[in-house]
Length: 257
Length: 219
Ligand SMILES: Nc1ncnc2c1ncn2[C@@H]1O[C@H](COP(=O)(O)OP(=O)(O)OP(=O)(O)O)[C@@H](O)[C@H]1O
Ligand SMILES: [Mg+2]
Image (cartoon, rainbow over all chains, first blue to last red; front, side):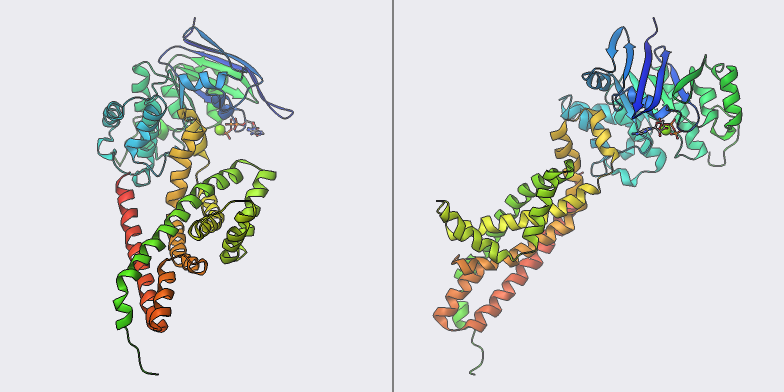
């Protein structure tokens, strides 16, 4: 039995069927990438996994626990097990980086501020942001903002970490850093699901690639380093550009490093 | 014309200065109550489309387009009609509260419109409930974005509270009239009073600047 099993997810917008019986499986510590043409339903699918997008039907099993995704109470359960990093990061501009991280743990989970700050500082240290705890998000670079957004999500101790286009706003060498970070997190047992257009990152990073087309899962590739070899996926990637500059494992020399 | 003579005014200076406290009290109470009411009005129009939103908007439109003095008079004369006997001081505070709420709701509304839309979904996925989202995210963000406008309105209220004297309240202006009518040095007392209002206003500008810097450091 896979760690995560999502089945039969249907989403409708009016008469349009945005998702049609979409699903995928993943093991614990997998990196799963959703790819597909614009408008194929990648973002919508990701949002269903954290209850931001109501579904017509759908089932999710995580670690043996079943969630009926169409049930009204499911959003709450989904949010307990997942955290999401939005494309715009959404760091609260009126709070320090540290407070962004400790807000939910203290206010929602009622953990002590001391303990939450201790954990937050350790996390920032790990992400190379030790000296940024007390600054405002406005004073961070794009890459730093994203790391803080990831750190904030990790403070929720989610089973699933969701990321929508984590690399779209970054310079090529920052893209590589994020890839390394995600791989690190996955190594520690975090299951990661991302939507990405950066084919280089997708092919080198993913344990599973889910190709969406017109709201349906067209193909699934599995195995790190092999997933992109699935014929339909390889064909899609060829026509949508496997940019070497966005390959975290790429050998291209980078003038900034 | 025999020239200005400030001595009779200075003889009553402690009494006049006491009025500064009353002025600050009126403005502060009306601002605090007005802000609370404004939060409710702003949330009402932020969350709703139909009748509630129109109601909240109409409230602001009505009270920002009529004289505050008429509003205080309305409170002063209408509350007794429904059996509520309130002091002139309280009438003025209530009238100014209702007026402030109208302006402050517009200011807060503009601030809430500036909150990045993604914050709402972030708050949701962080597990914050509605109350926590307003208290921790939306209102503080809006308040900070609109701090200059809010501070400015408080200053306007300090000056506007001079209307309290019309209802017999012993605020700064009220006491100035008292001194004027006993010393017959109206011009002198009004000059000194004007100076006190200006000093108060300048001091507030400094306090707000300091407050703002502390707020930014205490993030
Ligand atoms: N709230 C909505 N109302 C109506 N239609 C919607 C809504 N959200 C999404 N859709 C439709 O669902 C389809 C899938 O959208 P989605 O954003 O999931 O695509 P995507 O694969 O993420 O695209 P992109 O690569 O451009 O980000 C699109 O056709 C879109 O128009
Ligand atoms: Mg998308």
